[in-house]
Length: 154
Ligand SMILES: Cc1cc2nc3c(=O)[nH]c(=O)nc-3n(C[C@H](O)[C@H](O)[C@H](O)COP(=O)(O)O)c2cc1C
Image (tube, rainbow, N blue to C red):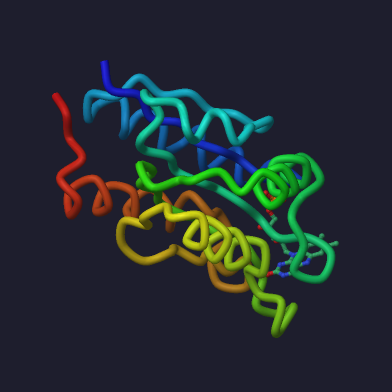
């Protein structure tokens, strides 16, 4: 069965909630889905992990959530080749933070690209100033993402 991993970076649970809400969409599309808050670079280079969705919020001043820091640091230090990886990215943030809006998601996107990974479609940026429940924006985005990139395997 095709495997999809959802990697979560969250402070208060919003990004995890998004992951849990979109999980059934991938299951209906034929995937075996794993949600993790403790990802490792090895998970991205494993052969059966060719498709990953990141759900990452921003804290501090454009910083990664605490649970995501070891993973981001390991990626920077190990610089693995992510040539075989296709990913989607949902960034949660709040535009009242100005220039650091969705800073963690944007930094992650640049890091993944620099390691050779391929983003499918545009990054979704969910603004807490406009969208009270992030999954209201994330669910239709994922439905479209699956459709547009022909990700159905069942
Ligand atoms: C202390 C703190 C700092 C934050 N800093 C930023 C920031 O720099 N940029 C941003 O876009 N959002 C920032 N946010 C907003 C969060 O990213 C946003 O509320 C998000 O939905 C939280 O998701 P979570 O529940 O997964 O942690 C901050 C929120 C808090 C509480």
